[in-house]
Length: 410
Image 1 (cartoon, rainbow, N blue to C red):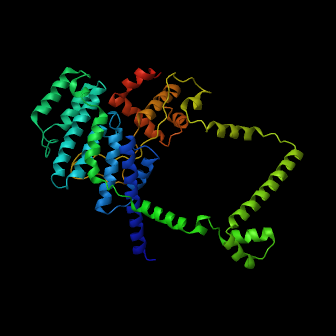
Image 2: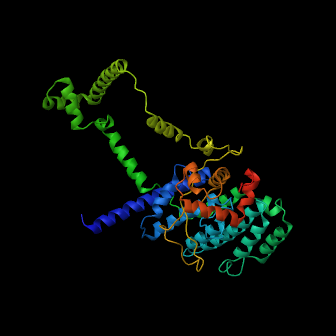
Image 3: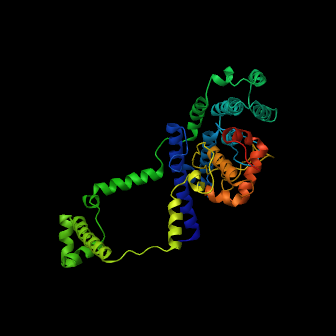
């Protein structure tokens, strides 16, 4: 097979996988209001690392990227790029602009309305968390003249948001009149136009293969290969050549094989038990006991259990959550013209991981990044942990963590 033929087939397989991934992620987003089921983000991250050339597949990859951001949008503290000041929904607004820039009316008008709603929601999530200072910064970024270019907006909407920001009231009617779930429903109603509701090609092929297997009565009985037949013949002491037709006609090859394996297993267990009874028990060496204890301790994934032998944890509950696997790099010069290639993506910090990281800093102290890394059992490097601590201090997230877990001893 030539290199060109191989590349063409790989591209076809990638297209099928992208199509299937969108099908799975979209259904989880619609039915369960999340994209974090069944390790979906791992699949999205794999797709982000592939070379995708088809316009449709590129659009679908950005659609999944947008769904990840909508899933995380409730927490304005999450950053998909630690060097960026944009909140998750602000970052999502840039992805949305890429999706809608080439669509035709009247869907384009609907996309503009949804973009405006997303910018408003980026302000509202900060206000609901009673952080009106950040909400004001988001408002200035999203509703400035440059940000509004190409977006038809009414001036009185801006004025209403500005009045709400001045009140600094988290119970303002603009905030209580709808919840974040209402915004997700609006997102669902618009983004469904980018999703193919039919069955993906991979699913059709799987069903076709299953139907073909079920239609054949011999295949339905899981016909085993020639090697298994020869094994059964040897165990039963019969001729392989003469036994083949009889076995296939009676379709009992599987049962014969199972019977032979069960008898062998019983005999093996009997021998093992006899040897165990006659062999004296050997005591493990101190080194082996140490390794066994380490392996057993790794079965417990909570930070509390990992460090309880050395320190006492703060009494607050440590949450364990799956980390998102999809990020994009913010393009400050021309955010509306292009997005980063799917291969240059990062892993954001979720609130649960930040909470665990902060408590580990409380236990081991600032600067002990190696011990903190081992306790958290994270894939992040010491430098990344150090940079994250600086980010926590820089963004003011330290105030939220202090309220939950107390100060960090210096």
